[in-house]
Length: 88
Image 1 (spheres, rainbow, N blue to C red):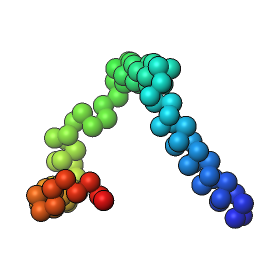
Image 2: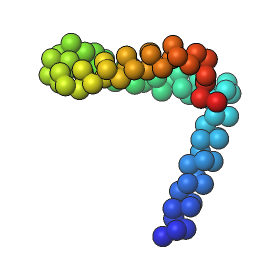
Image 3: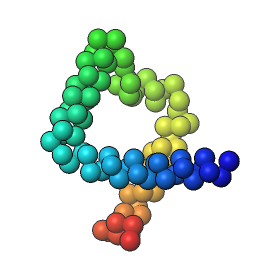
Image 4: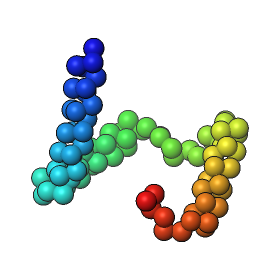
């Protein structure tokens, strides 16, 4: 069981490293642009509305919306208190 866990963690790290390298290549830029175009086409073709109807979502889930607004306000306060901290 530990072997599978460690191999999955190592695979994730290697995959992330390969992806960060791949995204800067010409092939990576082409691939991500093409996959974005396909996702946009599928969204328009299938009439998928993900995060487009924010007002409907806010009225349907007011408690979650209020909590998100509170958290965003707290983040803004922390950003003012600690400018350009960058997590270091």
